[in-house]
Length: 144
Image (tube, rainbow, N blue to C red; front, side, top):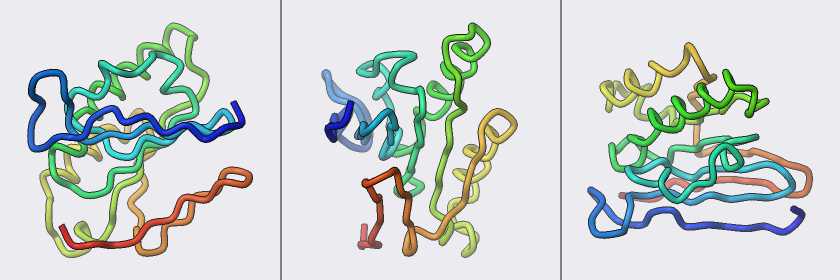
């Protein structure tokens, strides 16, 4: 797939209701996938194992409605890897500024619990620059 495809998986907060999920957007481009936030319920709209192959997960901020589906994604990826249906490990990116300021400690502990299976990278989103051939993902800090 050479075209850029952005699929909204969830857009509500702070909890799922009716047929709507918390925050999550799947971005697909040239055999690479990026998941912007992993809010509750988003996995029910994902195509497993296809959508988690070559997946980088970028958590925008550490409110639970943006990261709590990580356990489902990590467990699913683990199972599909054991079955030989998934070649590459997930990569998880989380914002570093709150970590450095000792904020959201519970969220960091929860997300780092997956580190024994998948790399968790704490990064400064003010300088985020992820490249995939001719696609670049950058970020800008905004008030919440």
